[in-house]
Image 1 (cartoon, rainbow, N blue to C red):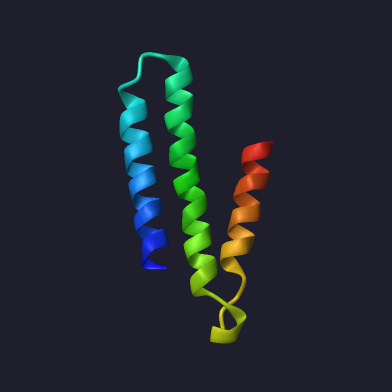
Image 2 (cartoon, rainbow, N blue to C red):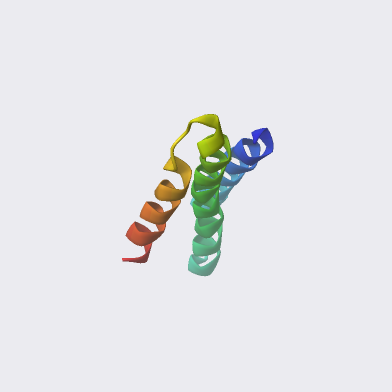
Length: 73
């Protein structure tokens, strides 16, 4: 679970900071998609943490579905 948080933070930070310095639109969108993968990784980390066996809800899976629905529309 800690690895998922680290990957999420690194991809969000790296993707956004490198995207800011891009002059090429295709590269900007590519680094932006790396940052968006980090946003999804937060949902994955929360989903691993909140399992029904541990008394948690399905917040991670619901968050991922909400994000993908909002991003797709």
